Length: 246
Ligand SMILES: Nc1ncnc2c1ncn2[C@@H]1O[C@H](COP(=O)(O)OP(=O)(O)O)[C@@H](O)[C@H]1O
Ligand SMILES: [Mg+2]
Image 1: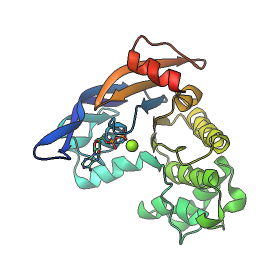
Image 2: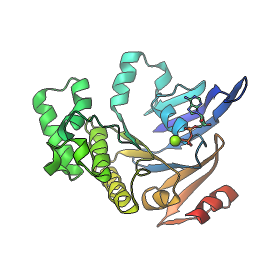
Image 3: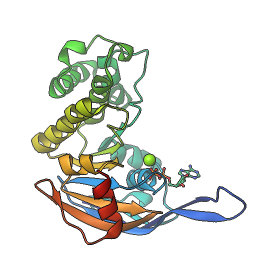
Image 4: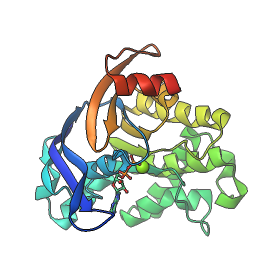
């Protein structure tokens, strides 16, 4: 249901003139309901590839289709509507400090023009799902890192997305808190069938959460692995190196 067809993204080269491919022409299919990982070292192109999925970065070539819809063909208004179906979770949480937990979760629904009554009900529901009902009136500064990220997840979930894109959602967290956030994402995938695409540099995250993962290196997918139980079999040297690191 997420189909990337030869997508390419170039940026100006850091030194001197010309351009380089942050993402070389890449094709990838991710099934409805799947938890899919993008793993690789810093600078490999993971975030760029993730952001191509909702056109936060527009590809220089290729196609992005979600449920058969070619996103590049949508006008600004239809693209905004399509993006309601794609939630996003960030490494640094990106919460609004001057809004309460409930206010943060309400934000995308306000933007989408929901009635106050529907917003209240949905915010309660989402805070219940991530286990933060008691924190509704608190401000982000009063929360732990793991709690902040669960607010981020509740906010992403609020508009009933079919996909959640998560960019290193646990990289700012300690190992124990990481597990609670991964459990939260897994729970949302299982209960609501939300497709999750998660960027990480940690093989442990892939093992704990994903069904499949693409290994990126220098802007290319060099391997796609399946996770069986928590085992990953590969013949690719780059993937083996990441597995040994973990
Ligand atoms: N907006 C940008 N402008 C120029 N170069 C960028 C931009 N975003 C990313 N890059 C470069 O593209 C490459 C891939 O970046 P990124 O996708 O962020 O990698 P990752 O998430 O795997 O660390 C890096 O070399 C990075 O410096
Ligand atoms: Mg990144």
